[in-house]
Amino acid sequence: MPAFSASAPGKIILFGEHAVVYNRPAIAVPVEQVSAKAIVTADLRGTAGSVKILAPDVGLETQLSDLSPTHPLAAAINSTTSALGVSRIPACTIKITSTIPVAAGLGSGAAVTVAILRALSAYLGHPLPDEQVCQLAYEVEKIHHGTPSGIDNTVVTYARPVYFIKDQPIEQLHPRLPFTIVIGDTGIQSPTAVAVGDVRKAWQQRKDEYEALFDSTGAIAVSARAVIEGGMTELLGPLMDANHGLLRKIGVSCPELDLLVQAARSAGALGAKLSGGGRGGNMIALVTPNSADKVAAALETAGAVRTIITQIRG
Image 1 (cartoon, rainbow, N blue to C red):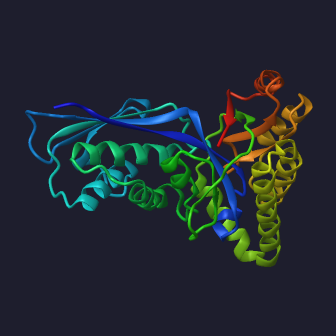
Image 2 (cartoon, rainbow, N blue to C red):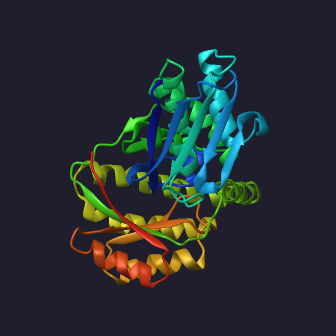
Image 3 (spheres, rainbow, N blue to C red):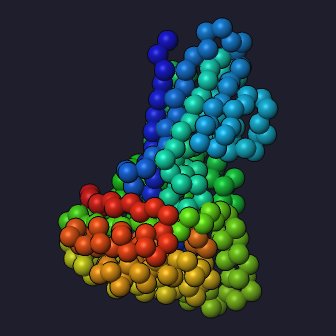
């Protein structure tokens, strides 16, 4: 019996993180340079219901039965079987690998979940459609993030740029011209759930102030969509700078992110901001194709543990 495999890309949020949780628009795009992969192989000698899980990147080798049902990997597997009405999985091994840094704002959790949902459903003979994959991945995202917006599972499932408003139909974003982004990783792991939870506490205590910050963030995302679809991508730089300023006021930046943002700007980036939950993780910079290598080098000199140069296309 052949092995069944599936992969899913990473992602970055260009505009609107945190505000998107409060029903303001955000823009996110896939990052194909990094990905998660799941491979399901039948164990012809195993007993039905026996599922071995291998995740060498995080040093995990275990049986599904030994994981808590609330473990994200177990939740992804059990969601698949529940959706298909399968009570006992034919014995198999599920191997999960990923080149996406964990807790860095690149959608690692969502990508792993989507890869499992697709590979396992194919192994069980009923590949899940994208819409169902997206919804099931959203439920698993609640384990990772507490109160997720749904943007990670959406952009990772469809692997296309999206303009996203929580609880509204997905809108695909259509860049008129490609543009280049450099991603700089602080190397600081920062679980999104913690940052989202802290922002919620601050919002509850200073609701009017935070609603105004979210309104301004949402307005930037609206402007950015018009700029991207109008082919005026050089105008994204000032919008990134403004969005980063708002994220600092929201309370999710940190000295390491601010240092990388400034280093990118000083090296010729057209604009830069943190991306994702903040408090560590990644920042992004808008660059010209000719300046991408220079900006990436400047970020590494300033302390980035890795950089990725990616092109955003329709």
